[in-house]
Image (cartoon, rainbow, N blue to C red; front, side, top):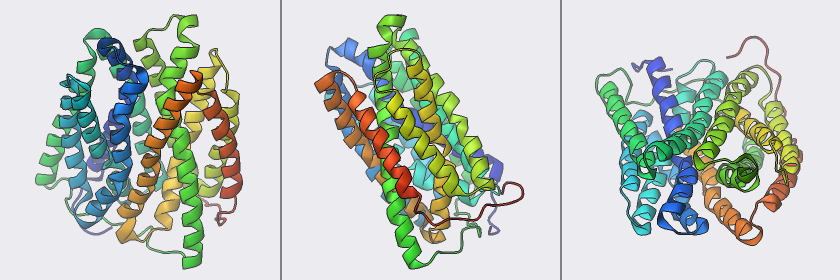
Length: 399
C-alpha cells in the first residue's frame, strides 16, 4: 500500500456499517409494504411497483458511483451514501401518498447504488487477508437484510410503518456525520488507498473469456438473490401464515433469521477463498442453489424456511470468491468502475425480477414457476462456470 495515513480498523468498521445499512434500506420495504397495504388500501402489486425505479437506480447508479470513487474518493462516496440514505428514508416515512413515496423510494435506491463499487474497493485495498475481510464485510450485508426485516416488523408492531423508515434514516445520518468527522481529522484517508496484490493483469483473450462468463454468472446469481429477497416474505405469508398463525411482524422475524444466519456463511466462504481455488468455491455454491431451488417449488411446511435459508447461505458464501476473481482480473485504477459494472448488472436485474414476481403472483398467486425456472438456470450456469480458467490451490494460511 502507499503511505497514505489511514486507520484500517476504523475503515473496516465504517465499511461494515455501510454494507449493513445499504442492504437494510434496499430490503425493508418488502416488509413495510405489507403494512402500507393495510393502511392505504392499495393492492400489493400496486405498492410493490413503487420500488421499481428505486430498484433500477440501485443498479444504474453503480456505474457513475464507481467512476466517482476512482476519480475522487471511496471514503468520501461512502460518507455521501450515509447522508443520502438517511434523508431519503426519512422522506419515505413522511410520505402521505403514492407519488411522494415513489419519489422517496427512488432517491433511496440512488444512494443505495454507491456502496458496492466504492465499498468493495475500499475493503479490497485496505485489508491483508482479503478473502476473510470480504467475508466479514459480506456478513454485514446479509445481516442488514435480516435486520431490515426485523426492525421493520418490530417498529410496525410497536409504533407504525412510518417509524420503520424514519428511525433507520436518523441512524444513517448520524453515522455519516461521524465518518465525515473522522475523514476531516485525518484518521480515515480521503485519498484512495491502493494495494499491490492485484497489480498483475491477465492476457486480453483470457480477460475477455472471464468477463463474458462472469457477467453471465453475476446476472443469474442476481436473479436468484432478487427473487428470493423480494418474494420470501410473501411466499411465507401465502404458504405458512394461516397454518402457523403468523403476523406480519413474525414473518419479518423469520426473514430476518434466514438472512442473519445465512449471512454468517460469508466468513466461511471468505476463508475458503483465501485457502483454495476461488473457482471451486464459486461453482460449489452455484450448484447448491440450483438443486435447492427445485426442492422449494411447492413446499408449504417448515422445510420451506430451512431450504430457503440454505439457498441464501450458498448465495452469500460465494460472494468473496466472486469479488476476488473480479479483483484479480481488473486493472487497479479501474477497480471501482469494474465493481460498478458488476453491480449495475446485478442490481439492474432487480426491476426485471420485480416484474416477474409481480406477474407470477398476478397469474398464479404464488412463485413456484420462477423457482423451478431458476433452479434449472443455476444448473446450466454450473456447467458454464466450469470453463473458467483453473487456478492453483493456495497453500499456507489465509492471506
